[in-house]
Length: 258
Image (cartoon, rainbow, N blue to C red):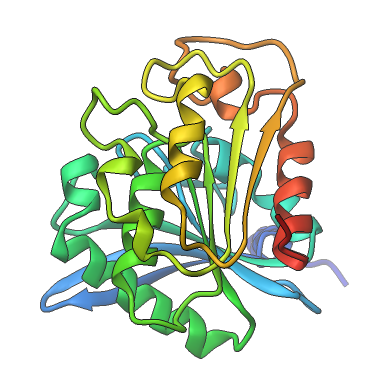
């Protein structure tokens, strides 16, 4: 029996779509008349869920061949998080914000969006939910961890954090003393971004004085940095050591310790 060409093409397209069916784009209503995009990839037998906050202006790029296209450290490491046994959600952008700068990331509207997304993720999975931010995304993760009601999230991970107190958005400008949950800080020893100087990280650790458990992982390694020092493909984005960084994060989430 000869299969018509149009049917063969349809079957091929269906198979290709199925091969990328691990993840899905969610358009969640988060405020009155506003929706927020979230990329969601659950994992069979997961031990926790991570909600990732990319840096820069936020978002995870276009969905290309069934995967988010952003080169941000957290986004391009999505499959490493999955391989470590974690459900993965990536926070996108709401329909009324083209960019998530530091002012937006600490505002009431952003916190309302995050709260609605957290509620939906908790509905989808009863596993512990962790907030994981990188670069400017640490502003979102810290603000949400501070602002959400107790018990909504299990802990927070801050990677390549904004720690230069001379610049807007430094995490120490937030009420970090309000954090009583486990907090992991991950930084690259060669991070050359002026906003994220490794020498300033101890001030962040100092202000996390009420965290139930806190840990600093100052990583080194990787290679082939490209572009500007504050961009995703430099040491700031753990270039060449994405799996090592994610495995360290996942291991600590599984067993937080000082």
